[in-house]
Amino acid sequence: MNTTESQAREEICRVGRSLFERGYVHATAGNISVRLDDGFLITPTDACLGFLDPARLAKLDLQGQQISGDKGSKTIALHRQIYAAACEHDTHTRCVIHTHSTHCVALSLNAHGPELLPAITPYFVMKVGHVPLVRYHRPGSTDAAQEVAALIRQYAARGTPIRAVMLPRLGPNVWHDTPGAAMATLEELEETARLMQLQANTPPLQASDLDDLRQTFGARW
Image (cartoon, rainbow, N blue to C red; front, side, top):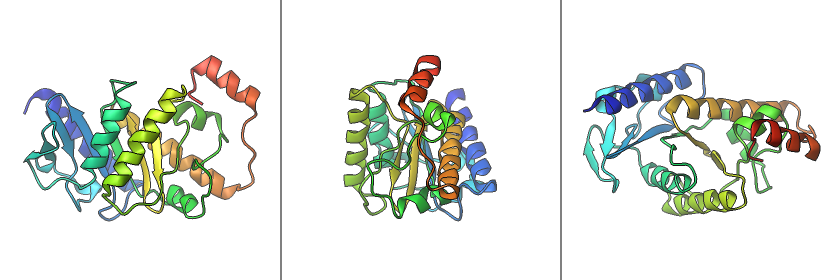
């Protein structure tokens, strides 16, 4: 195990523990993966993210076949599709996090639009961006993985690359270049969902506000 992999293992466990201790994940829900040069690390199936052991994380090869560690989460098929699609426009994509975060899931129960949230705060626009809703699929569905990959490519093609999608009744998947950055994206997404529940009739930012955020901060909206 080289230094890069060792650091990735420790970071997965640190982020998992932080998410668990602050209530972003519960029980054995959620998973975290990191893309390595020679494969992937992913949290084991039915593992509690608050009590991960770096040595027991599942390691898979580039084809998704397990090499070592406890049995990897079944969501690796979805994570691999996310990496493949996201890396077409952002080669630095290295981490995917999936949680069952309460406020995101709650919003998805009655969501009818193409996206989970409107642009109600500047930091949501700057740090998260569009969050398309995927059709409901059972956990681990390969159809969901293909649909997510297609959405990533569609949004990138129109010049608004995404860092998150929402699986209705399950939870968000977010991705970024490090576990820490992916966690921050998830935190901003869940906080915005909480605000939306508190103030359900909040109007979105105006077009001029969005233009200002794009020009000033490079927001992808």
